[in-house]
Image 1: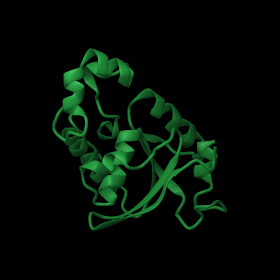
Image 2: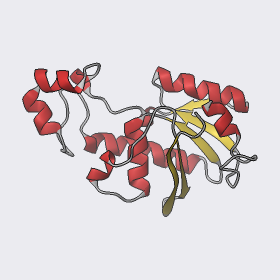
Image 3: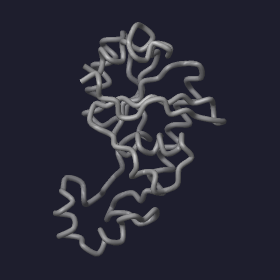
Image 4: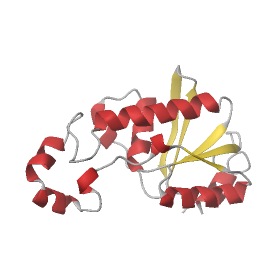
Length: 173
């Protein structure tokens, strides 16, 4: 369904004021590659992988629920909550993660000037890209709700400015 929604961009869909998607960039994590390939097949495009837009590494916490993490690592979890520089054991801090995501975003923007790019990623990188577009502080990472298979549309004017046009649209589902 995401592919048909993206195909509407530039045609007669709700985002017809945008240029058609001409490039697809995805996180190398398999579930995003699978989604990107569905979109690419629908649009006749190839997928470029960008490791900088992969999900944040929760290290030893990956694969555990919040309740499990709170139970097994209570002190580390308490230190990590709301922190910019504390990292889960063997994971990334928000500060390090943010630098990675912004590096990936800058690469995508610089390599695709004048093009409409579908970026297929995860909750935290999408939040980071939106946070950057809004020039938000560290707490802005936790503000936007990002649902699975949702579409967020942002327009970047080089490194000068950005517009947030749509966040977390699920009308295509």
